[in-house]
Length: 504
View 1 (cartoon, rainbow, N blue to C red):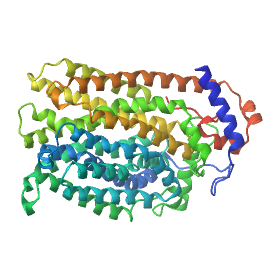
View 2: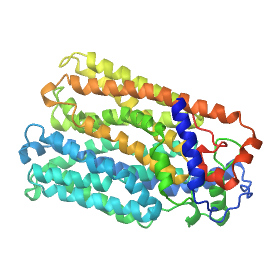
View 3: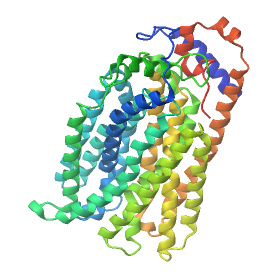
View 4: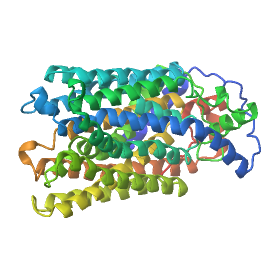
């Protein structure tokens, strides 16, 4: 760790000399937060909740349905109608993630330069159009091309929405809100199964197959929601029309004072620059967070693409297999929500991530050891356990890296990098449940188990690093800090400021 700490100190020194220091918009260094009591603070935050969280929840619910409904289309006969053979279905799944991963960081850079109320609905409108057009494909080539553009257009949503929440809420408020819209990912599996169950019965209407109707109808809904969001998604506290000037000032100042200590400031008004990009991409902790994130995404994407097929092999019809996925996703949503709320309440991240990783490890050991095709009830029960563990660590991981990166430009890049790297789990997850290994799926369950173990180890390392940095900064005196840095430099240093404390 010594070499890593030395590198960080050098980067900190370089950042101070390279940063163009600017004062925050309309905020002075000595300005104090308006004195609102707890009830008034909750009232203001509820106003924000009603405008931000439902919009993002609907967007995320739709985005996850739109990217994973290919699994429902497969069960409804897509592979046979398109004449897919061999690994072509898995290739179509993987193609989505190439642009999805590559364009997440560029998308967050654009988000910092363009109004969120313009950029977020625009990318949703684009992927809705792509999904609708997937209803007219006729071969593997069309499927692969459409999946590529679906990945390209969806790339900016998740990193953008999670970053957007950090510009409204303090570190121990953001996760509770994030899990509400993330619950859309869990519920998307349930809604996707229910929608597919109903839509596939439209097979033959207008000489269109049931799986085509899945893409067409769900794509049209996406387009309609995107158009609506142009008029109701706010940009940030400073321009929120639903807040009074005093409420705007209150939200801005409390965010700036959210350093984890009683001193210093952070800012959400910094301009995106190359130094912020480099500071985020050279922070080694980002890459350990990627491993933790992959510990969930490999299993989640594998589940979203193959769970209906796995359950169908228990002996159920295609329609009933779709329905039996619903309870698993509902259970996963309940576990993820409870974990996130408890994590905020106890102001801890690492311990809850560890708990979720351990549950995932145990569940995949059990799924690997359970004899199949016998004992379908036991296998079905362990699928609940696996889903609960996988979904419960996603939000704490994203919140953890968001809590521990400042200023906002570095946080935007860092969060996008973690999500982009973690989404490589989508490529892995879409290729590990091999048809030839059904119903045992040794490769699928074995890979999920291995990455969950790696995530557990990475969490322990990351927690120890943050603890050591906090302890080192606790030993510094205010006089030592003031001799070395000005107030503006301390603000621009963000999480490298001696006043900043990492969330554990």
